[in-house]
Amino acid sequence: MANHEHDSQGHHITPFNDYLKVAGALFALTFLTIIAHHFNKQLGVLAAPVAFLIATVKAVLVMLWFMHLKYDTVTNRVIFGAAFFFLALLLGFCGLDIWSRVTQISTL
Image (cartoon, rainbow, N blue to C red; front, top):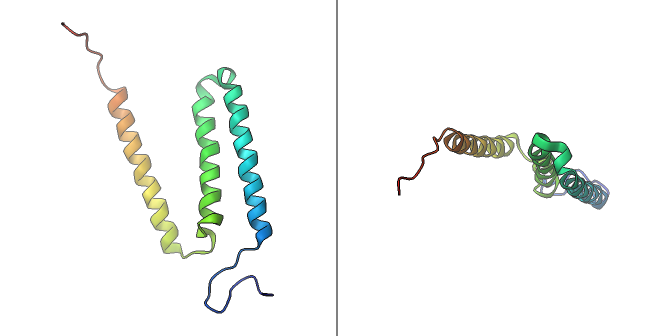
């Protein structure tokens, strides 16, 4: 099909070359994750945020291209964003619960 924007039903056709570029970026980010793990002790406190940042970039790439959110409606993007916001909120409250606990010594 000459027009890569839309077919007769209004669906977006992503060129295969775009999938190869995204797959290459995912492989590169995976190797970056391995390298970051190798320098885990040097990164110290920043090890976890670096790993989460790399994982977030990989998740965004997968959602935009492989789940086709890049060409989807704004409503679906907002729903996905809200779901991740509430997931982050849940994890944040769980973290607060764990970090705010008082260590108790057993009397047994």
